[in-house]
Image (cartoon, rainbow, N blue to C red; front, side, top):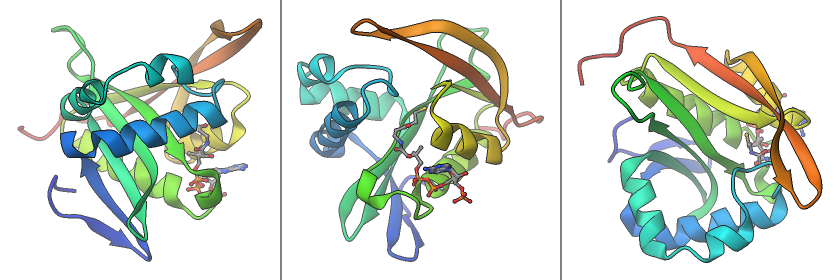
Amino acid sequence: MSDEKPSLSSDVMLRRLRADDAANFKAIRLEALQASPELLGSTFEFDNELDVTWFAGRLEESHVLGAFRAGVLAGTAGFSVQHGPKNAHKGRVWGMYVQSRARRLGIGRLLVSALLDVARARLEIVQLTVVTTNQPARRLYDSLGFVEFGMEPKASKLGDHYYDEAHMMLDFGRKPDAF
Ligand SMILES: CC(C)(COP(=O)(O)OP(=O)(O)OC[C@H]1O[C@@H](n2cnc3c(N)ncnc32)[C@H](O)[C@@H]1OP(=O)(O)O)[C@@H](O)C(=O)NCCC(=O)NCCS
């Protein structure tokens, strides 16, 4: 999918989010962190303190797709290229979220599939972490070919509660297109 040309599937439009979308992106991110703090990599309190310009920078340095229903941002998924000269063949998927009222409609699958199409052209491998009890997300990733390569016990801690996280990867098995 190109950066500029939106793709349409029924009433859902996908497009890359850019710096101009930062306020919208921060809002849905805060909603996600409020709804599912244990499943995502930050907290509402932490992200709420960050300025919109921080989110604008994140959108420009990563590739984040937004899914719009009737013009409203209903879901997001992104990846960023890993840092360091020996890690540039790998990307990390992050920011996966679909609003609860828009779930089970295929939006999550649409987002990750489109994201993988972009990542495949640039990277050899994408990785992610997922809380082991998060069955909806794990099933989605499984069904798209991600395989688990490890599990980190007590990977995150929220309040007094620890969460184990599965490390998953998808190896495209080929060199990326010239970029
Ligand atoms: C995970 C999430 C993004 C899925 O979004 P979604 O739009 O509902 O997903 P889809 O409708 O595209 O479903 C895709 C697949 O995911 C799995 N899935 C989704 N919801 C599920 C559920 N409640 N129970 C079991 N499997 C589920 C299924 O395999 C499904 O395929 P199927 O419809 O052919 O059975 C969404 O539940 C969400 O935002 N959860 C909270 C945040 C989160 O967990 N993010 C991931 C952090 S790693």
